[in-house]
Amino acid sequence: MDAQELIFDRHSVRDFLPEPIAMEILSDILQAGRLAPSTQNRQPWRYLVFTENAKIRKLAVNCGLIGLSNFFIRQAPCLILACADLKDNIRINGQDYYLVDTAISFHQLLLYARSYGIESCWLAAFSEKKLRNYLQLPAQWKIVAMAPLGYPKEKKGLYAKTVSSFAKSKDRKPLEEIVRFM
Image (cartoon, rainbow, N blue to C red; front, side):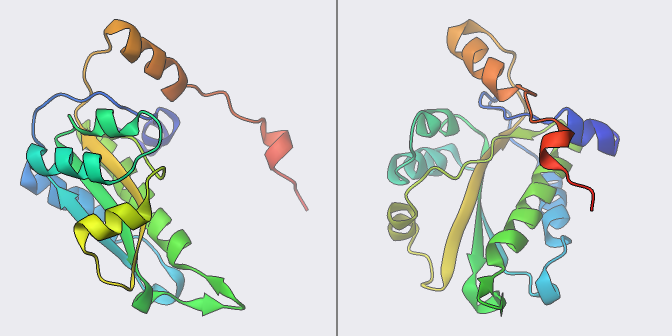
């Protein structure tokens, strides 16, 4: 899969086959995130990787997800939480950079996962407080996002068709609206 296909065909997937992701592949995907650029090379990202279904189901119950998210992550063969260690944050002119740096790393690993046929769905609609308490994270860690990962399931049924219709939407603002040449 070339870079254009990785980016242009990317969409959120919420229905996965139960097939586990091989540990060698998962390690390779995590390496892609590790190699991301960061402000002053601080690398604030930390990843929590869940590959046991029982742990993923328990996390889904305890994270206070908003909307329908918690029921579709329960059947994912892998779930990754992207966190930031604030001791590696850099603040310049009152601006913290851990969010940007961690988002770059996380997106890079999620895009790279597609080269293995592994899809995902970026999630940020959760209760950080509930999740932090459940996982007993270090005080200086912030949870930035999470994503279920897996091999996509064939789209069948009303829910799958409904989700697929908005998840695959390429209805985006035109370049003229978002770009300004100076």
